[in-house]
Image 1: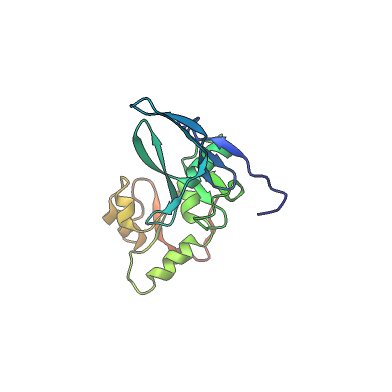
Image 2: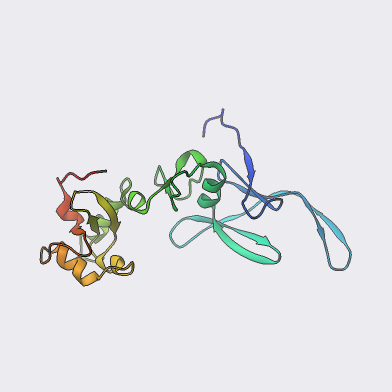
Length: 196
């Protein structure tokens, strides 16, 4: 982080007056007065909230409103507060591939296909799979050569409306297409050019 950067705090959507998020990826509670049921009023000073990792490595923070607790990922809070999203994307990419670096300058709204094929993700999955311990990663491609999505396995594509056995058959060359798409294992894509 550059010394010239200034930390900017903005209210968290649906938690205005309760919590704020900064462009550095920190979350804090707001100064406020708490009215207890016994009539006692307490002043609560602003406090930086503790962030804990999810099973997949993203940082999350616990927010509370009307006695309802909710765990929310920090990168989503930062993106909602600081990044315009004119195309209405639902996914957020970490540009440096570090899931714990939630600075606004490190995040970008994107499509699932872009997020799944960004940077070294595919090569890391392929490297994990080289001993056959995991399923084979697979690309979903249009007939014009545009990558639509990347799936960790044919079974994962099957969880999203495709027939995983037909997807696998396409990747093995036993079928030409499934639901209007070509399907290729990552190992088959080396040296091929795709449209962006």
